[in-house]
Length: 134
View 1 (cartoon, rainbow, N blue to C red):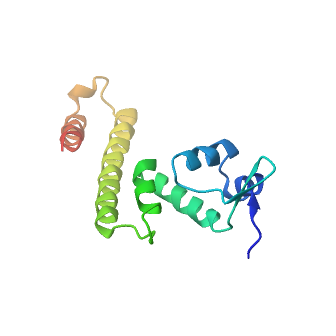
View 2: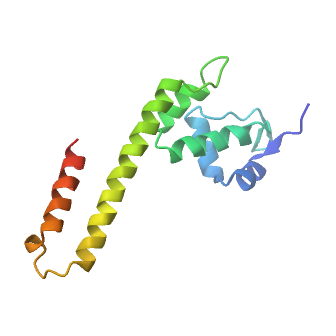
C-alpha cells in the first residue's frame, strides 16, 4: 500500500489550497480516504486527479462538467465529442481575441483624431461586431 498524503502535502504539491481541496471534496471531485486526527489523508493518485481538474478548468470546463467525468463509475475517460466541442469553442475565442487585439492596436496607433473617419477602423469594427454576434 502506498503512503497516504496529508492534506497539507497535497496542497503543497498540487498548488490547490486546503480550502480548495475541501471544496473539491464537497463537489465530489476528489475523495479523502482516511483521517489522521482531524487531517484528511489522500491516495497519491489524487495529485493526478487535481492536475486533470486544473487542466479542465483552464480549458473552460465547469466543476460540474469535470465532476461528471471524474466520478463516472469505472472510468475517467472524457467523452471525445465533448473535447472536440470545447476545442472548437476555444479556437473561436482565440480568433475573437486576436480581432480585438488588432482593433485595440489600430485604435492606439490610428492617425485619425476621430476614429470614425478611419476606413480601417470602421472595417475592424464591422468584423468585431460580426464575430461577437456569431
